[in-house]
Image 1 (cartoon, helix red, strand yellow):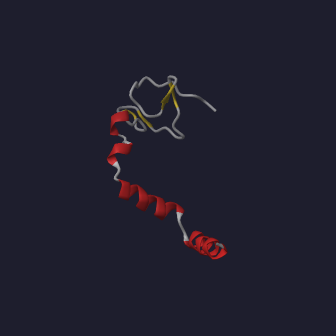
Image 2 (cartoon, rainbow, N blue to C red):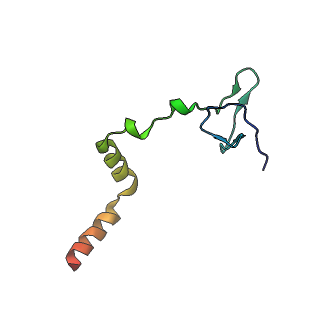
Image 3 (cartoon, rainbow, N blue to C red):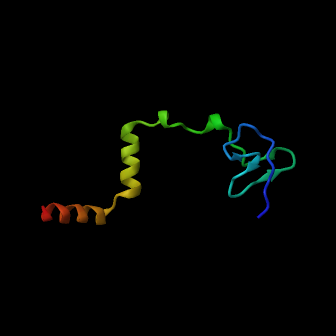
Length: 76
């Protein structure tokens, strides 16, 4: 797999001077369209505790987990 040498110093995909993005889009006039400045990425401080809990429940909790919890409570 080819490695792309990157000259941006503040890109989130920069890894030891090389691009670590899964896909790169380049434009002759604008340069790298995959470039994302480190400051543009949300930090953990931008998230509320409630937002994180809601995201966790939406992404990782389903009815099977609820059934498992019921089963475990019945065992006790």
